[in-house]
Length: 312
Image (tube, rainbow, N blue to C red; front, side):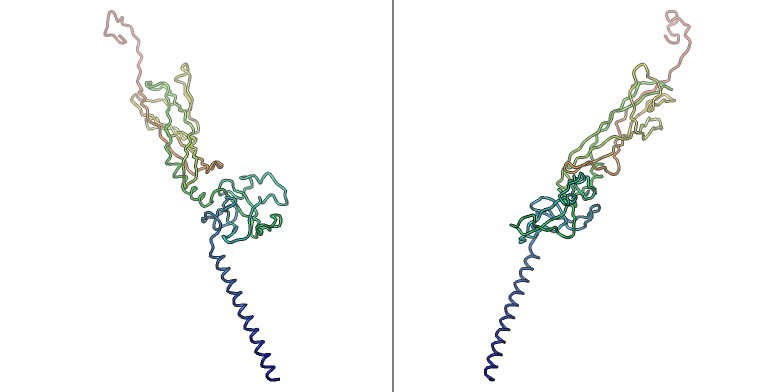
């Protein structure tokens, strides 16, 4: 009986040792798998740090390999056996609304073509209708990394100020001579100017629009800034006062110029036009207006009799 019990105990001990060995091997296998998953890089082409103000999420922005959009959602690892897709947030239950259109939903505004979406995931090879929505959403997706958008926003004002905006040519009536006390009409035709450039590998368009004008008359006086750039007068109305005209009290040569203030907007990769903080000042080339003094006297001399008489 003792021998029998000893054999029984030895058998149970062997079974326990085998079970422990199997558990150890299973744990090691699981740990190795977890290590490989954590060590593997995402199946996303690029990544960057971004901070979402409107839209909600702060985190690492990654570009999804299949959809080509940037998102803050974790949508797959290199060894992942799952697939992923997204649907617009406002298409819940298959019902679409006009505010689903990019730019109208008001949530995802950090880049062009921003959309608020739900991500779905499921085992590859299974029907996508069975895939489940990921927890934590909705998320914003963009066609461009929002981090790049923030960098562009930080540099666009300087880029705008450095654009070679052409100065405007202005006209004076009369020109180039005038008289003391005479109203001299001044006007210019400033045009909108467009500049295309590449900034941080993105296609940027800057539009400079003239919005205000400041006239400097050369005698220490100025007019503006005002939103009116003046308008020409017909010849029969020269000398009439206008909003931009000026009369000189003394004869002399006066250097006239005008400063044009430009407001700017910009777009990224053909997206909507966005206002630029601040404005650019562009001064025109100066022009000289020669102002003469006129005198009038009664003339009684006959110039044939007195060639040295006044007016002869």
